[in-house]
Image 1 (tube, rainbow, N blue to C red):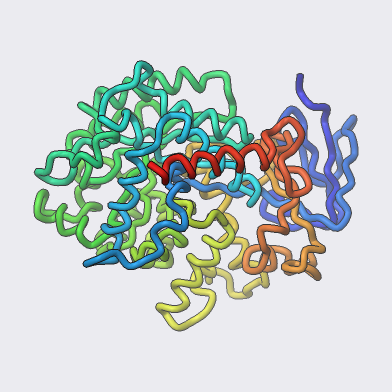
Image 2 (cartoon, helix red, strand yellow):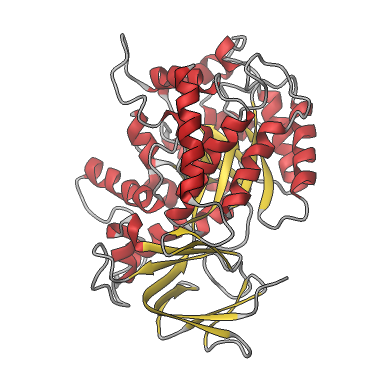
Length: 469
């Protein structure tokens, strides 16, 4: 039974690209009915001392990596780089059974919801059992992840990864046997089954994600890109995260990873390149010309020492941007937005690097408005979903921020977005709604959702078990 129409009246409302004072957000059958005067017949919900903003979106996540948080912050013998971190991640991936994966994913998604995330793109590449065998249900692990997100209450686009090899000319290592597909046809069959599994649930969808040019042969990428465009699926791929990946691609194909994707017809407006750090000017021009979305994951990229996404150059070339929590070492999409800008400030020795600059008269909230857009509408677009702006007819996915929280106290209509974007602590997010339904209420799980104590307790026991193994 659909919830009755409601009109939420906060002190401040950011919707449709504008900040409103004294305006209501009407929610009818899970969608935005209007902004301003409430729809006729709506129940009033007065939110004194609060602000409403669009929900945040993590367009790139590996939920199972929440299990290694706090266990990789050291120097490994001989090396302490991305590849050493990857070895540690592989060891954890080899341990998790289906119920472990559910418990870890549910913890990650609950933390996302508590921080204001209303939708996630889960780049899922754990497909088989620890010995590399297929489960009786070959999609069991993907379904566990989808179930975890929907129980918490956030939307999920299951980006089903394709993974064929250890690298150019390399057989998969024993640590990678849980990831491996036999053919691109096997990936496609899995996607069709998962699409059927998600049918009827407006909060679940699928997309296709060849892991990288390192892990997939060129023909797999070409074939899966064609299927994505034919079926209207989002197409995601890790791109140029590490210099070694670029070097390997040059050795195998004679071009950069971006050049290879362009050759294969895999650069288009439905495509998202994740990371896109180690790019040439020619790469940037190719991505921009195709209208590709680049999903930056600045917290993870900082944690792994990957490098800095050249976001300013990408935007000027014509790319769109989204943000992701990736390894989930920290789940805070506002911090990712800050870091995207902040890393560039450190490199360029100047401020407001990502400000639009197209207007002769800059507004106080121009930069924050743009960055917030990457964290909301940019993510929804990347996942092939409508919304992210709280415009009429869009899904009613929104967060309620406490204007009395010390991190944003004193914010006004003129500086709401800069305060939230650059200064808000996660404690400021008090309520979260997805499709008009409460997911978080008063900083805790909404009634009818699994409680923090239950989720954290199960996760704690899972961590004890897997790290004792």
